Image 1 (spheres, rainbow, N blue to C red):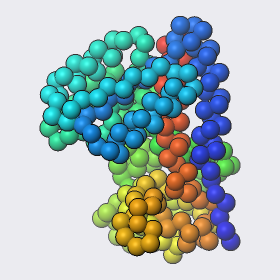
Image 2 (cartoon, rainbow, N blue to C red; image 1 turned 180 degrees about the vertical axis):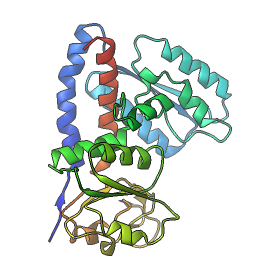
Image 3 (cartoon, one colour; image 1 turned 60 degrees about the vertical axis):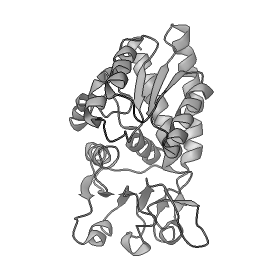
Image 4 (cartoon, helix red, strand yellow; image 1 turned 90 degrees about the horizontal axis):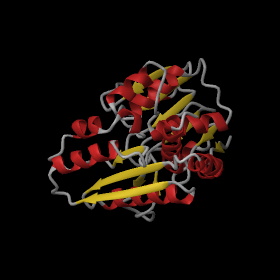
Length: 288
């Protein structure tokens, strides 16, 4: 059996084409969606992510602002800028690129973003709403994964789902979304005993651990849906420098029923759902 590939790149493009009409309708009502992205420091990966987010906005006619600070900036300066953006009617979404330098209190920064503009879905108020099953904003990567399930016809109700990773960005919100969809969910972490015993039961397996090719074929239940959230750059061997996920794609493709590739899987969906959240924020403000 060779698994069917879930093409995140194609789905992302399909969704973005649909976003353009929503952006035009909002602009006609004086609510052109606006996203502000704050970057602190010069981390190369973060710079790429921010550039992709800004370009994604511009490509569908949204307004976007990129705000860059030196890594040594006083956190109070960033907090003051967030407060100004909270009050700016042209900005519907505010995103602070993580991770932040060590002298920042990450929780304080995320809490400073107005909950109705927290398009990353990380504000405590929005996390609580998600836990209650009535989310205002869904964190972008798990939101993208749910759209991939929907597009691929994956019925989650009653399924055994295993999430490897318990981060606030992916693992925990992913588990909540799966619970809300009726799945029976297990969240595994670095201290989980017999990890493979859990993963081999999974009808749905989501890997978000940040370790290249961590999930091997013998950890996958035949016919399972395998979602690879990881993105890693190989350090050694003939493929050094190439990107890969947390899943050994070539091996697991021979066992799984459906699988996402890296690149071209979850990655394109993350930025797409950030655009979706920003558009939804603008629509709420416009009373749509």
